[in-house]
Length: 104
Ligand SMILES: [Zn+2]
Image (cartoon, rainbow, N blue to C red; front, side, top):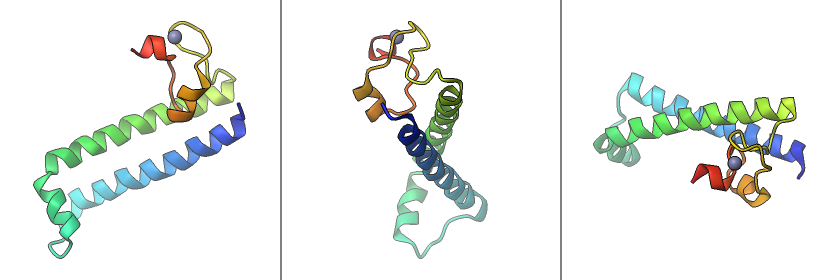
């Protein structure tokens, strides 16, 4: 497994999530743009938007932890059982900290 490409994926994902969180925050601060059909949908779904922000924040935290573990050389090792995390799983969820057995 190429760790530097994993790091790139994580850093990119972090950027994307940071942008998402910032845009939700902006919407909450400045109110809603009535000209945007997208915003109109979001307004009906404010609880969903709040949930999205929460999820993005949690994902961000997990990415930070994954990057930290990458720096410490602990990346790809299950935090619960200490076994290696399956590479297919890491490809699907690059910030996974538990193997599929422990996560289930
Ligand atoms: Zn495990």
